[in-house]
Length: 107
Length: 119
Image (cartoon, rainbow over the protein chains, first blue to last red):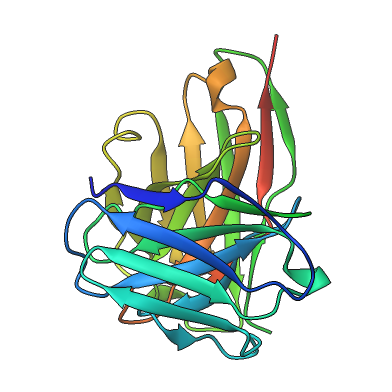
């Protein structure tokens, strides 16, 4: 299986902060990377696919970059609704593995 | 409305069997793969397996092969995951999830079925 490693595991930030989450793949995933947001008690929600394509309805403060095996999710100005856990997922090679998650907490 | 509707919460004892369901609506059910994702309490997302309801082609993640059975009934637009011998470690939230057509990122999620296995 391809291993996906996110960092940090937990991130404390304030409203208005710029936040960056990193995701590293154990091998090349040919740019097939997605990001999801999950709030407590809710199903995950797709934010970004194919590294940087924003899902319809997702605010433009979310963006994704990267290539090869290293990818980032950036929230340009953290809003109260953004405090959640974020997961990356590779969908290049089955099984389509997820990172372990990054919890964004209120500082 | 395009949606996946999952069956309700389950409380079972170790050794019991269980089958939970996920019904799709608002789209061509037989034409999209549907997967199952496990989330243990306080933990991350784990891909269990995936099925194509059109022909029941099924793939399992190595960690779940032999532990669960995924099936589909396209006549009622429903997929299932079942256990024959539940363990306490099967306690988790189980999500069904539909990958985008032609790609494998998930653009549609069910709300989840909580399963508790305790004596």
